[in-house]
Length: 120
Image (cartoon, rainbow, N blue to C red):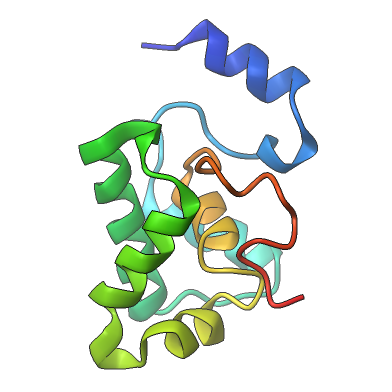
């Protein structure tokens, strides 16, 4: 069910939140692949694994997990593949910001600062 407060916040809120889905249900991996392709990024199984992980975290915890905790969780989950470096190689604009966008998730708390989760 659509949460009108989330919709209003998305439409009138900060530009960093725009373009993110409000609900989990209408999202498909094909949407993520198409969105990434428009951005010039070809999603691999590794990319999709991270996106699925973020969606699972959001489904389990909602928007209660902040960006710092989420990044720490991602680094632990993907430590065997290279952790931090692996994540940034796949998502150069930031594993939290960029992967959340492709996952159709709102930006987690703590990503309001545009420099958080980016390589800049």
